[in-house]
Length: 511
Image 1 (cartoon, rainbow, N blue to C red):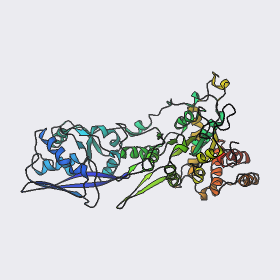
Image 2: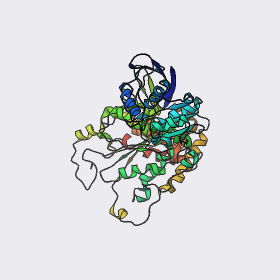
Image 3: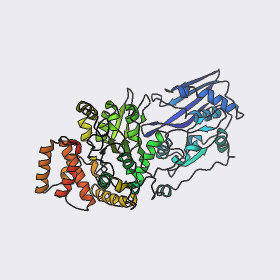
Image 4: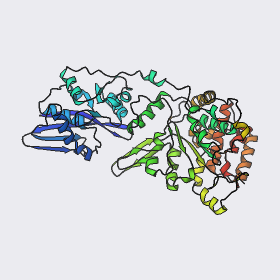
């Protein structure tokens, strides 16, 4: 007897339907074909114990299971449940004529209970696209899969529940989530708020510009100046996510198995990897490619604290994703692409000791040490950071000031208004939503300068010896400053402010 049960495999952030064909014959043996990995090959032991502990048995026959398409590599333990169901139906222990209308995924424990899986959201999206009636999966993943409307999503706690469902005697009901209600549960009182920051008005202004245009930013200053404190508050002033962005972000976190019983993500991610991170962990990869930190920060913020402490090769692999806003990982037999459109916020000390040019502290670093420290960050990487800003320690008078600073919610209103201008501007242009994403062609179209601004920029380019990429960055930042001013055209003081934010391009920038 031949039985077909359907599951799914996730490659990148897309799912592919897998057909498990179970065939019973005379003899004894368990043969699993179709490029399964070791976790799937070991499934026979988990399935045998789970069946026995639920009053069922692994039949003493020759069992041949093909996982089609046979040339596609399958990985992970999430195929235990569909394989167990196929074996039970093939050996006439249960009847389930409707099973071909459902996608089934789940890892079995020895007692028959289910462990969570990865990639539930992309699998649910694919199941709906291909016209399946429903999707059975572990109860821990049910919220993320139930985001998909038009598909019956069943959260299962153990093997017996799904057997009872097909026998018509279970109480299993599909989980229903109001996606829009889930999405609009926004936090108007963020955990980290700009009202906690004393002084640093010019830095807050920079953060506002960076958030309004989605620009990358680097903060340079001595220890204790407030770099990390400021960076942690950036997500609180970013505009709320759109439904499309929320789905994209949730998909990536679902593939990485990081959702932890959460439905739709409605808060922008903030990722802050340690400087000992490897390049595979940062950009993604591995023998079975998984999303890295830059993809986990998609539509949010990636914060790299103490940038020169990161290994140089780790920072260099980030150059191409910063430009293309996606990362492609190639292996011998397949290629996966993960989105990585994030806002980079980096911080660094101006010297190894941290106190270069601080009059109250002695500078203990030699010029050679300074040069070696700064050379860890390459010119091409710095070129891709739109805003460079120096952070100075806050004087006592400002620290002791009891006046309440401007809150994140107030700043976010201005940022959101500027983003709305940009959304309208780039309407109809695919994959461009804010100023930082503009190509050279779009910069020429939307960043036209008057004669005075051109002259100002020409002088700055010659004096500071700026690259062509830095020229583009200045224009993008100036366009954002104009948007915050609700100005149709870029004028000279917008350009002047944008030029100020290229500290590291200046000779003797802290001298």
